Amino acid sequence: MPIRFDHVTYAYPATRGGAQPALVDVDLTVADGEFLGVIGHTGSGKSTLIQHINGLLLPTTGRVTVDGIDLADRTARREVRRRVGLVFQYPEHQLFADTVAEDVAFGPRALGLPAGEIEQLVITALERVGLDFCEVGHRSPFELSGGQMRRVAIAGVLATRPGTLVLDEPMAGLDPVGRGAMRELLRTLHHQGLTVIMVSHDMEDVAALADRVLVLRNGAVFACGTTSDVFSHHAELREIGLGVPRAALFAARLAARGVVLHAHPLTVEALADAIASACTSHREVG
Ligand SMILES: Nc1ncnc2c1ncn2[C@@H]1O[C@H](COP(=O)(O)OP(=O)(O)O)[C@@H](O)[C@H]1O
Ligand SMILES: [Mg+2]
Image 1: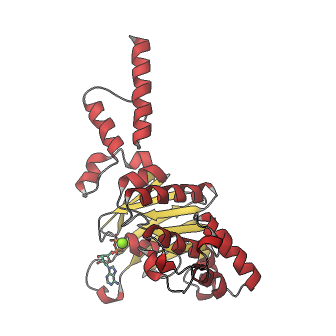
Image 2 (image 1 turned 60 degrees about the vertical axis):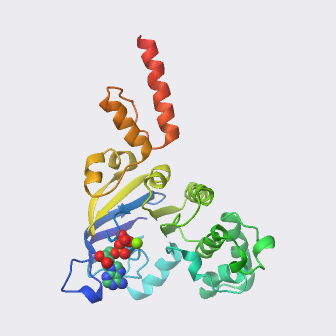
Image 3 (image 1 turned 90 degrees about the vertical axis):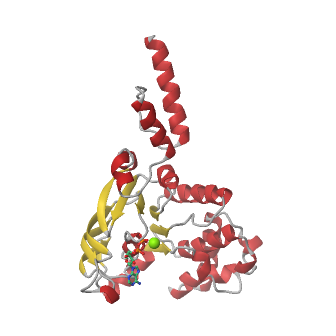
């Protein structure tokens, strides 16, 4: 069952009655199994929005429901937190335990699960992020590389087996290799059936992964649609200070010169395919 934002407005307590709310009348549905990218300028409300999905923040007005459960209900909120895993920006900063295994076990332990079950959950969660329990389980998380630490943090969220994973800038600060690996990990988790909501300022990452894109501007929904549809609005996005994926820009420049591709490529690979097929059909016509 879906995640629903029903006319959600949120003002931080410090700014209530004063400045513009951080979220303004946001209406949104995220379906099961979807990969939603959330983009927008700094301060547009992305982090505020995702903290509503597991009730860390509660709407000032409006309603958020997950699987039909209203997050305003304190008891129900606990259940939603099992279903929705939230990975903060730089989640490795929140690692704290002496060993990787202990850190990943924190969530399942807080749920009061039996010890035997917890170990299996930890093993599986580490496996899902590409880490081997026997190899890293006993090590201090702080001895690992930055990319590995981030994986441990994500494993900690996956350990309670949420159906939805929400990530705030999961690629931030990673080098190109780490970035590629994180893309692969998120793609795999999505293919395994997780609903994924990813905040990102990198249009290439969003284009490579998301089915749909939500664009926020000053806390309000500026656009929401399929990734190819949203990224076809170059001019509008540019107006609010956002770019589009390189491949989409390239295709638009070709179109301006009279070379129209019969697809809306969003990645370099898709662009190459579209150009190749345009060349083939051109040859056939000629
Ligand atoms: N703890 C806070 N207290 C008051 N205002 C905040 C707080 N956190 C964020 N804001 C404000 O809310 C708005 C949205 O911020 P945020 O959700 O962090 O945006 P984004 O993640 O898109 O950069 C901004 O104007 C920001 O200054
Ligand atoms: Mg943010």
